[in-house]
Image 1 (spheres, rainbow, N blue to C red):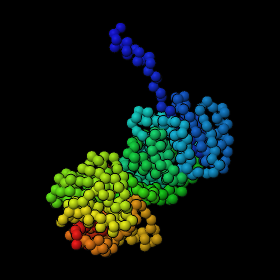
Image 2 (image 1 turned 180 degrees about the horizontal axis):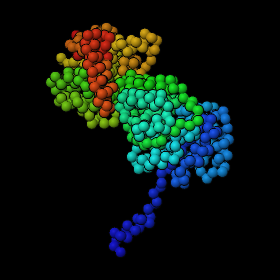
Image 3 (image 1 turned 60 degrees about the vertical axis):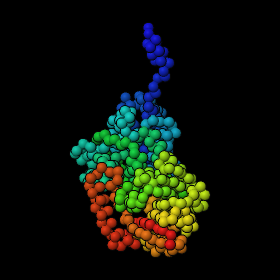
Image 4 (image 1 turned 30 degrees about the vertical axis):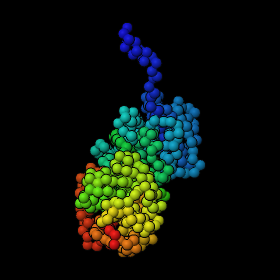
Length: 494
């Protein structure tokens, strides 16, 4: 026997056997006394032999679902646990409790199965297999993949049409291409669920929509497999109109979040800002100004992750970046990085003599913008400029929110949760004068409507977003104080 063969044999003997993925099932049940046993009994024997655990969650049913589940457990070989919530958690709340169990139980895959038998247990392995093969992070059973099967399976026409219309709308806004958003037969990689903030999701029936949006936002892979449609005698607890309103609100909110207009958690925002590459954006205007200037020393105040600074360096400038947080990769994108809280002013090590100082979306984040702007002025070289962008509080969006009494902070945009000061064109003009500076040039840019099509391969959505952006830019030019999303200034010493 050769040394290599002996080594291979030794390795084969000593290697630990590969562990099989642990697959569990979450059975959500509400008043399912008449269907629960039949649903569990229909699980394929091949699946029943390999499943790690099955959790039946009775959501405070008014019938004896829980007692029937316990009796079935006592006479079954299935690895079964039956729990009853003392208080009704709602369809989404019941799932949250079940997925937390899956995470804590150390499962690798969990399948959502309804206790009313609406979704065929016989097809459970079809949902699990793509996850076992590593092809997806979530797999949905779709009644719409096979043409005509939903109606032939008994889906009422009004539900079929509603499903199709809502799915098309949701796909367009979210940038997905699912055949159905409204199936409750799903399998998830538990690690993917653990990355989502499930506690913030709805307790109602639109939980299923929110989890799709959460997976998509995280870049997770979603697959679909065909399943049969079955409508029996089960009672539907879904209020169709409310459900439609909720899911429409969810996807619109998701898209607004992408535009920076959605609700965000309050508190200090330490995430890096997205680079806005469009020539019509604030970054585009600032880069245009910097590109026209001869190479010199640039101070980028509030440089974030340095991606903007990297583009400035490409114009031949030497860039020093300053920010509260040292984001990953920033030191490679700037010539020098200084970590500092701008509320305390620029640190002494920043120095002076800068040809250009950039303060993009910064002054609204500090408590005393006049002090900081004066500090920036004093760090300029002779003939130097401060380039500034600020959000316009007079824009129609914050105006409208305030006018109807719905003022609140957002994740991004004019009502960014991190803003401590608000500016209009007039109020910022007074600040410029107070700091003994004057304007060389000013511009207004419109709303980031083109973001609607970002990350989507939907050609029509992209075209609609581009056309809307053209209209918005025209409105901004005609009435900048109402339609201007941001104002930009080139300032010099007075």
